[in-house]
Image 1 (cartoon, protein in one colour):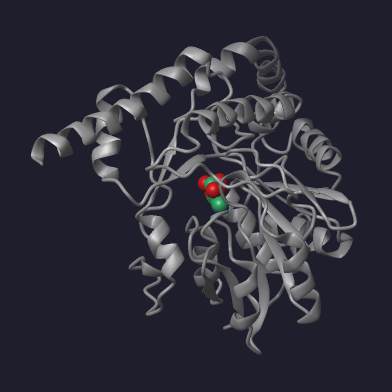
Image 2 (spheres, rainbow, N blue to C red; image 1 turned 60 degrees about the horizontal axis):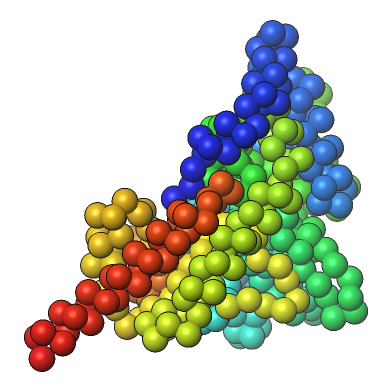
Length: 376
Ligand SMILES: *Cc1c(COP(=O)(O)O)cnc(C)c1O
């Protein structure tokens, strides 16, 4: 779905020398590159505190641990999403409460959040799905009225901007009380292994997050709280330090691919192109088409035989997973799981590749229509 090798080739000189600097000093854990990268990311995001950790799922767990919530507290999140938020809730004996998604943006439907709030609700955890920020102004207003924390899962939308009605522009992940991110290789800012970060503007929360990520200690071998061991490797931090300088370019390149797909598929009778919000930028972690009028497995198989990978994010709603089995119904989330398919998108795709993909999608529909006509 993404060509990580060609991106590396373009940055090889800088990345190799950054890695070599780490290997030649031997500071593999907590080397200077880790703190340097944290400061560089804080500067990029305009966030006061960035705490690197081992991966994006740990980041969510650490963020929730820092809030010291009573057992059974409820965390409102989207039913159409990756598993991570729900999973860490269960591990921490918190209850994920799933709210349906918006049919257009795929994000949590902010209009349905208030109805899900109970006396046990403590957190709203919006996930900026596929690279487009949720309706944060509405979500922050609800959170402030009900005295709730907001944890943004920003694993897919790092670098996206959100504009408030007064014109203020903020980066996704700097709006709620805490945000989390993943540097998994295929993410928009990916390292060459696992990595993640938690960020916040709140000094006290930052200190707690830092302590929890480091075995609950501020002073070595003095453990004030029960924490975890979650670190970003120095090598990964060094790689990320190089790549972060190019993040805005990476995003622009993804947006070019998305615009080409949009142009090709808009108005197509069987396909809906991803909706854009006019108060947010879309960084296209995924380019996701919606199509309820076709056989998605056949579509995937057809493209696969032509050498084009596709993915369904996500084929089964979180609340329907055996691990979480909740007897609820969320019609939009359930419908979307059967109607979405994501096309390859990345930073080094040329016009020829994009044209090949769009032409192959068209030829799938031509063949389907031919078969239908023949059968009639
Ligand atoms: C990738 C991802 C995560 C988890 O990140 P890992 O680094 O793989 O643990 C969490 N939430 C979302 C929305 C993601 O896309």
